[in-house]
Amino acid sequence: MDRYPGTRGLAFREALLWERSRKGRIGLSLPEQDVPRSELDAGLVGDGPDLPELSEVDVVRHYTRLSTWNCGVDTGTYPLGSCTMKYNPKINDRVAGLPGFANLHPMMPVECIQGALSLMYALERDLLEITGMHAASLQPSAGAQGELAGMLMIHAYHAHRGRQRRKIIMPATAHGTNPASAALCGYSPVPVQLSQDGIMTPEAIREVMDEDTAGIMITNPNTLGIFESHIAEIAKIIHEKGGLVYGDGANLNALMGYADVEKMGIDVLHVNVHKTLSTPHGGGGPGAGPVVVRDVLEPFLPVPRVVKDGDRYTLSSDAPLSIGRLHSFFGNFAVLVRALAYTRTLGKHLKDVTEMAVLNANYVKAGLKGVYNLPFPQPSLHECIFNDAIQRKQGVTTLDVAKRLIDFGYHPPTVYFPLVVDGALMIEPTETESKADLDGFVEALRAIAGEAAANPAMVTDTPKNTAVARPDEVLAARHLILRGETPQ
Ligand SMILES: *Cc1c(COP(=O)(O)O)cnc(C)c1O
Image 1 (cartoon, rainbow, N blue to C red):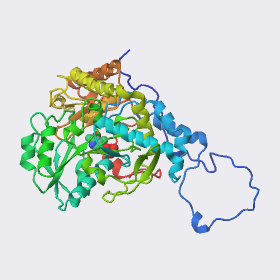
Image 2 (cartoon, rainbow, N blue to C red):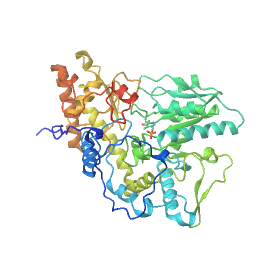
Image 3 (cartoon, rainbow, N blue to C red):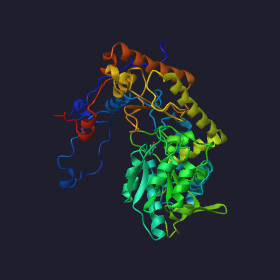
Image 4 (tube, helix red, strand yellow):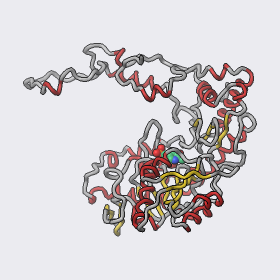
């Protein structure tokens, strides 16, 4: 049997719910009414929304069948670069669903939520131990909101020192959310030249850093999967001119247990706990993007903060310089429960996560070297980036390779990002894939390269085995069909 899973199984055709709808069909049976009928306000009822009428079994089958059209981390390798789509231990979901957590009312007085507060305090301590930083807030509900929190703190820091600045240094490898977060704080991004090796150099930073620049946003390892080895020196240059260093910690999977973020000179960092520390994500969340800071930024952290006083935990909003509240109640609490379950399950073995994530990425890199073009051939950390320079000569593009991979049973890697690599195929296998699974994945990509060389049409006209092949992605995003009408 082939080593890759392939997709030859069931792919039900599926009608829209509105097409299955039958007048009077219903998903529940209520007992006969034994109180007098009372008309609702006519204005409230009207014609009502156009909802399909269906039985319970219609609805369950519809959504279960649609779920079989997707690749997911529970169906196979999901090597979406920069997203860390690792398998998530089910025990973490189970723990987050315990009634004591799941039924907790967020308006309970602090005396009644000591357990929840102690959990949050413990997770903050774990994040501080992993990063080497000084203080934390669990409030931001995603990486992007963590960035916003960090940039608001940097903004508040400069305002407090009496002179606001206008610019922020941004490498071309940055995730799109970085310039967006900076812009929300009124900063304009200043691009910086990368070296041949795909990293920032102290010389390039020295050229652009000035006293009107609030700081820099650095992702380390960067989105090429390469460690920014000059980071400490770069941070020194920024600090000497009164700026601060924002660290995008989405790639913490490559650092845990090996690198101390504080020693890199980072002043504030967000952690994508839904990437690094489990929680199923994708499809829009929920996630959490806690921030950790060096002591200079502690006064600016969001409130309320969890404070430990002897054996007791309280929530404190006594912080006059705080940027304020970013999220109602405690942030995305169930995601935080999963993160703590993950750190406490692995403990010092979090270091093995990093080791395996880096090893797996380099294994894939070695397996595909020469078959796909490797723009940055030096060793990388948790992800590796190829492009379609070889296949394009045959008229086969990165998008074609990604689509063909679905026929082989794999979710495609991230494509066309980072922008500095033309036609990028960005692969992040994560630590959870076995050697056998990685071999299958590599073999599939090698087979596709073989097809592209021998008969490009085998790759360009794909995927062949899925219910939907190539939707118009722009139209699909711009013209949402929510009511069952057919697009014009
Ligand atoms: C995922 C990611 C983000 C944004 O995180 P979200 O949780 O999706 O908002 C920011 N930077 C990098 C490098 C990322 O990979």
